[in-house]
Length: 88
Image (cartoon, rainbow, N blue to C red; front, side, top):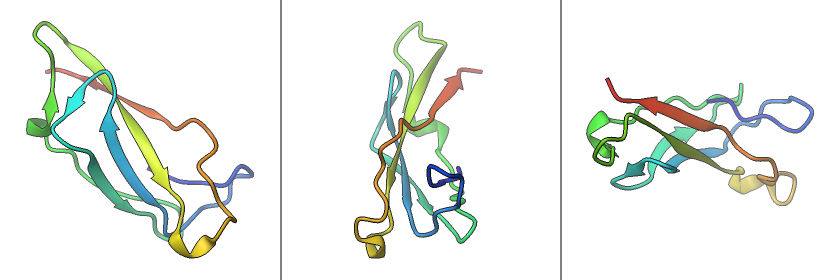
């Protein structure tokens, strides 16, 4: 997951979390903190994703918390990506 400014510059130090969307998570999953390239890498265990009976796909929502030391330089003002998950 990459976090960028509105002009495409990477944002290091932002916290990235995945939360329930149309799929339920047992609890929000912290992917990690972005590096200098604005990239956070993480893993969501399949056992934490809860499909409703008969549900074959759904979405998870990405939340971004700007770096703590940025003051008001950054805010999460744009809509963030949704992750599409398909049952295997």
